[in-house]
Length: 214
Image 1 (tube, rainbow, N blue to C red):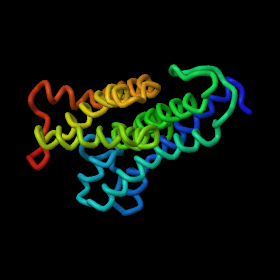
Image 2: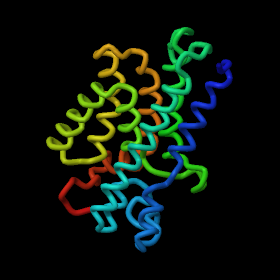
Image 3: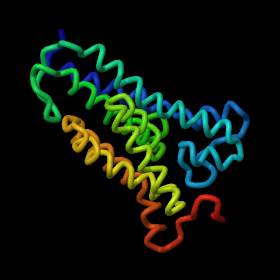
Image 4: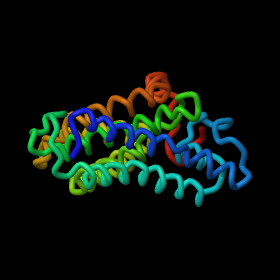
């Protein structure tokens, strides 16, 4: 049984899992150098794709999503039935949800502000998708449709990502998962902060479209 403070371990679990810089590790292992030296300087899949290796980019997406999903699933197992205080609107009888929420936010924060890279990292969208899959997969399916539709209409990857993370808390609430509303709001805030350069380019009309010239 864990006490109230032990729930902080769930956040640490998520943060450490999220902090693994898979994009950087994969590109270095493939002999493609430091992915931070090209494009946006991010360690995420979009920047890995700029190396020209689609396979590595796909692997980065999957691994970044997995490092979001795995700690949330582990938290659901490890904190199942423990007695703890309410967090993120969770009832005292269900600390499992509180642990999952903390692990979820921690994983996205770890990816975006990894301590192994001077607290710099990726933009968090793939990890956020993995987190949402573990928290509530039906919500994830709806959000995936929102992402695909937004990308198809606007052909701007950053707009699709930001629209989706902003929609996720509302979708969760509407679909009967209100307990995930505030964790998803926190995740959206982190992802938006990491997209601040994209927001600047959008305001200047300089953000590239998918398939267009950078």
